[in-house]
Image 1 (cartoon, one colour):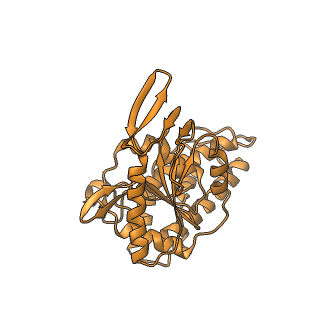
Image 2 (cartoon, helix red, strand yellow):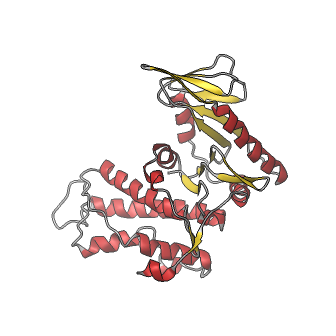
Image 3 (cartoon, one colour):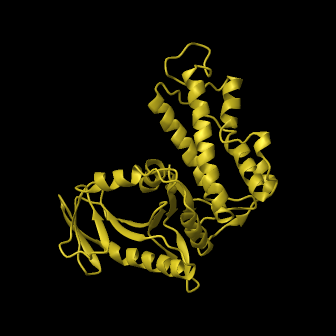
Amino acid sequence: MGQLIKLQDYISRYENDVYRYASEFIRLKKKQWERIKEEWENGETNDAPIDSSWEWLEEKRSVFQTIRGWFKRSEEERTDEGLNSQETSCDEDEFFSSMFVTEPKTVDELKLLFLEKVFELQMKWASSTLKHVSIVDRKFYYEEPLKYFLQRFPDTYLCLYKPVFLAKNAPVELDTVLLSPLATWCISFAEGEIIVGSTERFWTEIEKNGEKKRINPLISLRRTEKIISDLYDRYEIELPIKKVILNRYGYIDYRYAPGDVELIDKRYYEQWFSSLRSSTAPLKHMQLKAASHLLRHCYSHYYERQWQEDEQ
């Protein structure tokens, strides 16, 4: 799963310490998946023998304890008593008070439930800290491109989804930025049956029922690259920046497209996606340095937590 380090203009705990949370997420996810999968395979979550199934039984106390234990660090691992540790602990206690009611029958169903649970946790990490919280628009929980970045890419990919940066003291929403260990991907979607590109302000989308205009995605893509490139120059960050216009299910027709932009449509998508997904490179220092400085220049809108209300 890619890591959601910034969601639009919501406050993210990665802003506090991206070095800590990026590695923490990978460790927690791996550890808890192995634990849950083992118990599921052993049938420990059901009174009756199960063939490759993990039952979520609300009345079974052991299951409740298992779920609350997801992503929960053991006592000997809790050496940091600072605010960051309190953030994770408080969030886990709140998050894992809820339970699944779906009963997975196969390992694939178990994986899907696990991914959905982790997705919800990621949304919390990307919209709250110990002291502050942002009100997330519910649409993001159902936004397919967001889940695409978070559930289809490796854990070492750090995602800034439609981040809002401060450019000359004015908030500007950029395209999605994906930080891999080896490169910075600026990605703009232009999806449709046939997308005809040009140098004009509008591109044309050809459908069965006719044509319609859409804003040229290169405009926002170049703006995204310019802001990131300026920050990289300022902080001496050496991480290649690549620009992509993505159409996963249709075609892009742009005969004289600029050479510094990759047009990835259904003809080239699988090859492009496989090359990124197959990456086994670990988190890199330069990648985390880039993430840290980008987050520092993002705009965040949030409120102070009302602890009494939260506890109720």
